[in-house]
Length: 121
Image (cartoon, helix red, strand yellow):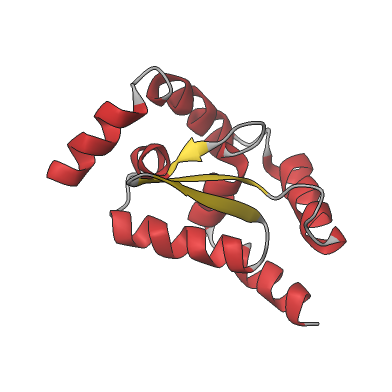
């Protein structure tokens, strides 16, 4: 029951849904997620922590930067099923389509340049 509750909590916020769907098929630096969502770094970190606690995403530290990707095969069935359900249900919505277009532009920016700029701000 704990896994179910963690997943439903994680999926109860629009920004967490947007971050989750942005990770579909790719790994992103937290700076890229910050740029996409337009939120403060601490807010994005909290959102990503909630998604990671629900085992919907996996994070790794590379030097100063933190990267996230969708949970893989080792994730619980509930987490993988939740990701598939969210993707099927919401990937065609206008907000997620706008995010996909915006993410294409963000991915053109060198992550190191983007992250350094955010740390100076």
